[in-house]
Length: 302
Image (tube, one colour):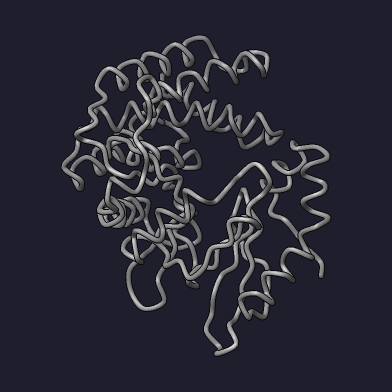
């Protein structure tokens, strides 16, 4: 069996060195074992899965499924827990989980929001609507983070650590603004307002259901204020930010706030913090062209 990984997945696997190379070498055997255990016939690899191998599959009774196998540094236990608790509400339905092989068997969905020709405003509305369903997952599904490990504090530490390790690719004014926003979000952290946030609801992680509606995939499953997820939804529009980037993104932020009824400034601050942290994270495993786009767009916003 020939295994072809997506570009970001290849970069992440390469960054793992020998461990990543061993995972790639053993992947055909892993897929064969999962196919036998779950009675699957595998089809073509699917786009997406930046930290996993994703392939179409069919059961012995002819039902379409998706098989996902995570790379070595990405366990799927938390993701499986969220998907199981959601029972298909706002999320792809989980059919099976193999924790030893870090594999999930999921319902088959259609094309992603990223691949769907729609105005940005309609895409943002679809993200908000689906997130509001997904936030109904019981909070008990996700363990509470210890003091000082709220999402904003974790992201602030990540930004500072990666910026130092990568030789300070972040402009000082961008870094200062990201830290300022992280401190403000950390100070505003209220456990009573938290939901089970998806953690990374970008357009490639929202897929069309076969008949109607949308479903999220690849949840990180973190306790966070819901404005955090909307900040992530604001993060991924670098291609639309030519010209007056601030004015364009202001309009998108207004739409997210108005359609969700949540705090606009919080959404903006989360979105900027995520733009910087994502740029640095992507650069950290060698995808500098993609990462630089996030960092450059952040600079345009200050």
